[in-house]
Image 1 (cartoon, rainbow, N blue to C red):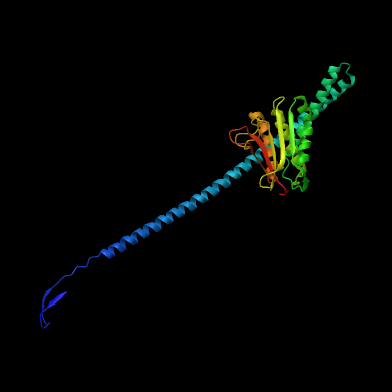
Image 2 (image 1 turned 60 degrees about the vertical axis):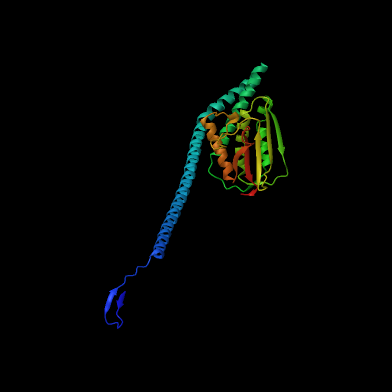
Length: 292
């Protein structure tokens, strides 16, 4: 700033005054930090959104691939079952006719018993093929009132001869009255027949087998548990099908179990593990009561 004389008509000198810009620098630093924070928050938000989108897409693709695999497996089993039905039924009919003829003309008691066993096994094989064909049907929109207790009783009656012959100690606990399940009665019965038959075929002679049916803890589902003190459920909890005794029998067996699981899921249910972790894994089937 200028320095004037007393008359303020002449400049004697100039004085320079410097202001400390500390406040301005602080404001600039604050603005810079705010810009970086906003950019960082925006980047993190965009990354989280992209991660969520990718996760949703990945989950959808996994479900789609799983569904396609199950459809392909069902189609393969259906084609196999239809082909086997045409190929095997004629020889089975011949075997049954021969066994019946031998039974009528048998003079030896052992021959008669053997013929009866052959006829029974042929009938059982034909019934198994019919059930497999039923399980490969396209989804049904049945509105039948199905009582799960009667379904289990019917399935057990079908394997009563095997249970008696192998001295399997079956304990059935039906906590009735239970509300009915609304769905495809034929599909549920067929799936339960296959499930019980698969489990019984894997139980050791003289071993116990416990089947309990009752309401689940949440009260909205019906719970069916099957246990015998051994692992009768696959390690991934029915992801690849049931394995009696914890042993994989064959590819066709697992495909049949995949069809059982699809019938259960089609009715709004699921197959899970029964028993605490570290203990033998039993089978637990959950089905919704009432209209699914």
